Image (cartoon, rainbow over the protein chains, first blue to last red):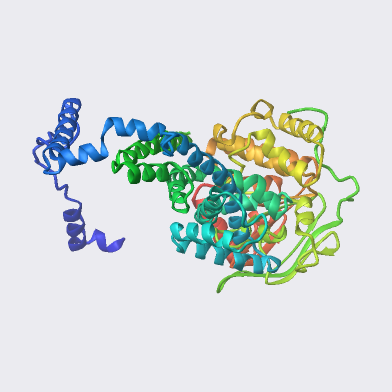
Amino acid sequence: MAEFRSGAGRDELLSVLQPTGAGGPGFIRGPRLLGGGRHSTVISTVSTVTFVAVFVAAFLFAPGSALVRRTFFSGSNMWRSLIGNHRAGLPGIGPALLLNIKMFLVAEVLILVLALVLALVRESTGPVMFPLRILATVYVDVFRGVPLLLVIYMVGFGMPALSIRYVSDQPLAVYGVTALVLSYSAYVSEVYRAGLHSVHRSQTMAARSLGLSRWTSTRYVVLPQAVRNIIPALLNDFISLQKDTALVGVLGAIEANQAAQIYGATTFNYSGFTTAAILFLILTIPLARFTDHLIAKDRNRRLAGALT
Amino acid sequence: MSQAQPAMPSQPDDAPGTEAVRVEGLHKSFGTFEVLRGIDLSVASHEVICLIGASGSGKSTLLRCMNLLEPIDSGRIILWGQDIAVEGQVDENLVRRQIGIVFQSFNLFPHMNVLANVTLAPIKALRVPRSTAEGEARTLLARFGLLDKELDYPDRLSGGQQQRVAIVRALAMHPRIMLLDEVTSALDPELVAEVLDVIRELAAAGMTMVIATHEMGFARDIANRVCFLADGLIVEQAPPAELFSAPKDERTQRFLRSIIEAGRLS
């Protein structure tokens, strides 16, 4: 304190505290190129139209434009690939998509359960759980590291080859779902773990201080809060899962992607892929918007909580 | 608040003067930092003890060790004649049902309403039927002026209300001892009184309590005995009149002087 009262130190302090903007040009902002202001609606409209126009022009005036339009965007082919042709042995992409949806719904439930078990085992303490903890860790490492496509091949071709009754004579989609569950549960268990860690330690302490057991504290205090925190991340993984059901087509299961492939191989027109792409978009976009909605709601809730 | 003594925990079997807890030679380190360096403390039934001392002197750690939330390095904690600090031989959940603790930061469960916060442990740990647990919870909530809040979530409550709910939540387990860890430190000044009133009521009902606090005036009013902690030791302990007016140890004198300078003790 004392040194500031003496001459030199005091002058130094005052010079540091000197306002820098004194005598400046006031608070009027110069013109800006990007964003903001009264004309924002007009600007965003013009910008959108320009962007779209550039891309459409590039597409229309490309040298191979006519060919691409004919082979990928032919309306009649898109329609025919959608409904298929029973007599010609052409599976419809629309009906085939039902298999994707079925696989997704079954896999989703199994993933949620298996991933939770994996996460709880990995977060467990105590020497009794040690071997299981190691097992779960190895499992997650392996199935996060191996590409999903390889897992699908190994399960889809390996399990039938084993020639074990029931295990080896299942429909292809069952192997597909098995592979999806194996791979995704490893990812989702990490999401669960992040969720468990996101709940503050004081919550566990409060629960344990009331005489609740470790498991009861996790079950009723930590887990409900953890799941609430990770819902957006879970939905994000499920958007990805919806698309990845298309990979099961490599086993020969007639799902949307495989149906499109068959249509292309038969007619030499690839508009079926466009059809399949549009169908997948119709599936995933609502889920994506719903995720955004939940994130926004959660943010508002937190903000409201911080203000009160 | 003035109903005819419903559900207020009291222990008629504990004759005053019986030793409830005794801590002997308690040591506790976090890493290389030794927080508690040989604490000796005896608490009689129905006694109210206030722990005072600077932040970091070990008050909170002592309370957490006493209900086994922190494992201790050495020493003994004897609860009604039984050593509970023997690792592996004591069911810590059973111990904690006897010793309630309330934290500075409330730690209510944010995803449950007030009633669920209070009834969770009785239902899940004591296996009390839900209707019974809710009835008892309502009685306690009513007693502390919180009955109209039973369906509210914690984030809708003021800090004082949250802390009172936290106290009720601990009381719902019928603890024989309550540990209060700076329960008013996180509260706005105008909300402190309502929480202190609750504690006064508990003291009047004969609850055995160990209270870590910075509210010196409150400690002087309520405590049977005040312990001053510094550097992980109980430096001085005496009835409040004695300790506040004629502190013997030099460190106690310095601490109280700084408190008075800060205007926290008239």
